[in-house]
Image (cartoon, rainbow, N blue to C red; front, side, top):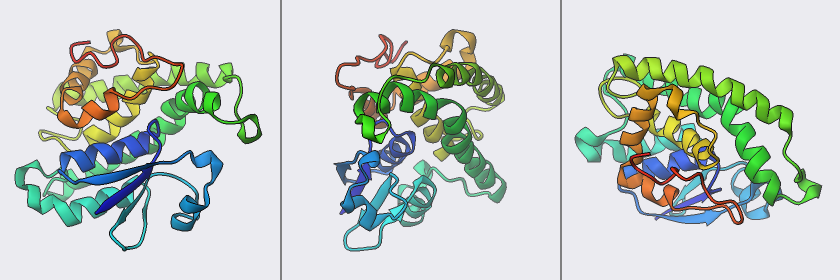
Length: 230
């Protein structure tokens, strides 16, 4: 049995939920607010971050990268041509590069600002940093997102999927981050038709349905968030 400790609007957590679903892995979810630093989480991961995955009585696997590799090594071969890690070393390197880009660079420059300022800070107590959004951080994110969309749009204009001709972990890493921004209506889809078309394909997959059904209390999603045709 797999147990996932996560926050619903953590992009890295969303990534893990997507790839668990794609690999057909049943798992139990534990919703965690990491800013509360609950003892249960700290006992599993001293860094106090999510996601964390535990299988049966085994050790905690902490962070999206290690979880990705663990799932691929333990379940990837069983799904045959649906495996999300390519066989060729160069394709594997490209997949890992783009997963890292989406979950680290995109998060640091764009999605992390949106999630922290517009979602987390509305939930967090003031003692933990909650309060009004930082307008300067939001301006930075709104400027930066265009650069990322253009880059990924360039990639999918010449490839079927983000990392190449097959669906990989890279597609779900990017979709996880963009889905958080899209919930808030912060993705300028009209400027980048190639990446919009790609996202519509990922968005229509069954693994995305649980994410598209989630809501932040008192903050409804953007009108097209759950619309598969935008």
